[in-house]
Length: 318
Ligand SMILES: Nc1ncnc2c1ncn2[C@@H]1O[C@H](COP(=O)(O)OP(=O)(O)OP(=O)(O)O)[C@@H](O)[C@H]1O
Image (cartoon, rainbow, N blue to C red; front, side, top):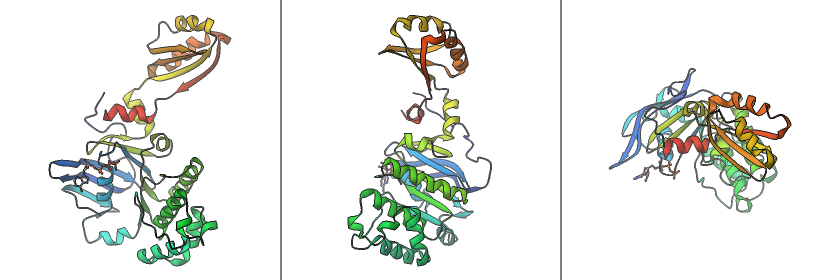
């Protein structure tokens, strides 16, 4: 598989705009292990930024470095212009909301008491707690003890505590773990609402299909390095991955389809159960449409499939 020496597509770590998070040559070494190995990236204000990668790729380590929770071995990280390792970071930290992968909650507290507890820790106004619970869809469960909460409700409560104090920057580690599809949708609606208010969010996720439609840009990490950086579409185009045409065709017409596509750069063609799947190079997309049009009504249905982020991801990290 192809390995990218330089970050691709939109690959300039400094996309235009105002960078809230700026990372230059960041590294974290544990003995011989290079958990993070020279990362450069910039996240713009109001951007929804995804960080993805295999287990052990270095995401969590980078995340902790971004939050100033662990010191870097090399490089520089600034948030809102303040180095995370410097004294000035305290003030910036008040503008950051953080959802750790495994948020610690106390079973004996109610949802509202939990938020009051976190509000005290963060020096955030207690009066906001009710509205935050409402925002994450937990108002109805405010008086119930956390021990009675489902996994998804706990995750929402964790998200709620990250929103206390009206943070301008959110770091959300696997925020949709345990959420059902409806709750995931609602989560991203909330995030988009926050983005419209100018909030910047960095999200990690293992669910690539979920993240690929929802973030503005993403970084794909492997072996401590950012292997690819940009919008999903830009990454797809940069990699020039082929497209799939899924056709519904009567079996008797399979040969006619093959013949019509004969002169085009077809990468693969598979026919079974009244369907033909044709993989073609991206630049041949319109030529394939034109060739299929010559078949008239013999093509009963057609669907164009873009390569998934999984394809992009494994293209970079295998
Ligand atoms: N405290 C530590 N001491 C030694 N090695 C560590 C430490 N923390 C992380 N590592 C190593 O650094 C590498 C990156 O780990 P990290 O947890 O950042 O990966 P990740 O992408 O977050 O993985 P996951 O998706 O499983 O959470 C791994 O090889 C890991 O073993």
